Length: 523
Image (cartoon, rainbow, N blue to C red; front, side):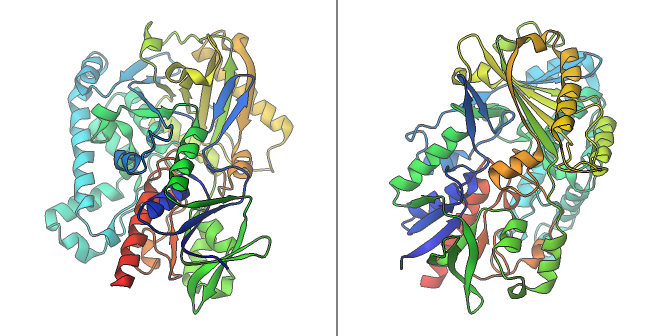
C-alpha cells in the first residue's frame, strides 16, 4: 500500500497550489480528483472557436511569490492584465476607474469633486487596516471571506489600545456605511460595492462587509503595478494546466476519476482516505480543498466529530448568489454610455444604480426571488485575450449578482430559465442597443449548474470565494485556525479559508502551515 506525506482532496486552484508547494518542498504528495479533469472551478468550454471560461470578470490569479515559486510562466501560464473598470447606471451615466489614481481623481473631479480626494483617503484606510491585521499572530488572522474578526483580545492587545479599537471598528463595519461615510457619488459607491460583493450572499449593509475591500483590486497595495485584475490566456483551464504541470515536474502525483468517500481515522487522527472503489491511500496529513460543509458532512462519520462543531457546520449556509451568462458575438458590441475609445482600454463594466438597489436585490435573493433589476458585471475577455474568440468575433460574459440557487416555490425549470434570460436581455439591450443581433450562441450557468459542474456546495463561482454563514474559527483547534480543524492531521485549503476561489492563496498558506507542522514533528 502506497504511503504519502500528504493527500490533497480536490484538484481545484487551491488544491493544486497546496500540492505543488508541498512537492516543491520535497514532500511526497498525491492529489485525488473525482472528475475527469483538473481545475475544479477553473474550466473552459470550447464552442465553435469561442472559449467560455469559468471566470466571469478580471480577477487576481495567484500571488507573484507563488507564480515564481511554481515557475508557472515556464509551464505556459500567461496572465493578461486589465487596467480599467467602468461603472454604468440605468440612466446612462458612466465612470472610469484605473490603477492610475491621479487619472481617476481627474475623472471624479468632474462628476463628484469631493470624492476625488476622499477616494484616496478610503484607499489609505483600507491599506492601513491590511497592515494592522498582518501584525496579528497567524492564529488570530482575520478572514474577510468567513466574516468578522476572530482574534483573541490578548492578540489585539499587542497592537495597542487605539490600533486594536480601530481594527475592530473596521472589521465590524458594513461596506455600505463605510462607502457612504467617505463618498457621495452613487455610481462610484455602487461600482465598488458590486465588485466587493460579487458572488457573496451579503447585503452591502451587513455588519462585517467593509472588510471585503481588502480583497478589492482597486484598494490593493499593488494596484498600480498589477492593474484591476487579469485574465489567464486561454481561460481558466490554462491556469489549471500550468499548476498540474508544475506539480508533476516536482514529483507530485495527480489521479483523476478518484472520488474520495471517507477520511480514514486512527486514534482520532487523519491517516488517509478511502476511494469510491474501496481502495485505501495512507498519508500522515490530509488536506481538503472541498468546502467546509462538503468536507465534514460527506467524508466523516458524524459521530466522530465534536458535537458543537458539527452543529455549526450543519447550520452553515452555503448558497450560490450569482449566475453567469456567456454570449458568443459576431462582432464587438456597442455601449453608448462608455467613452468612444473604451475598446482601446478594455475593462469590466459594472451595472448597478446605487447601494440601496443592491440591498433590494439581496432581500429578493433571501426570499428566493431573482433580482428585478439585476446588478451585473459585464466583461469582454476577448478584447484582452484574442484566443477567446475567432477573428473579429467576441465573447461577452455577464455575471448576475443575487440569483438564488432555488426559487421560493421550487427548482429552476426550463421555462423559468428562459424567462430569466429574457429578463436579462431586456436590461442588456438598454446598455448595448443591437446586442441581440450579434448573438450566435450562449451558455447559462445558474448556481445548480455550477454545483453540478464543480462540486461547490450551493454553486458559487465567485472570484472572491464562496462565502458561507460565518463559522467561528475559534472552534477549529490546533495551529493557525484558518486552516486547521478539530481532526488532527486534517487541514482545509478551500476558497473560504483564503481570499479567492481562483487565487490559490488558501492553498499556498495551508501548505505553509502543513510544512511548519511537519518541521515541528521532525524536530
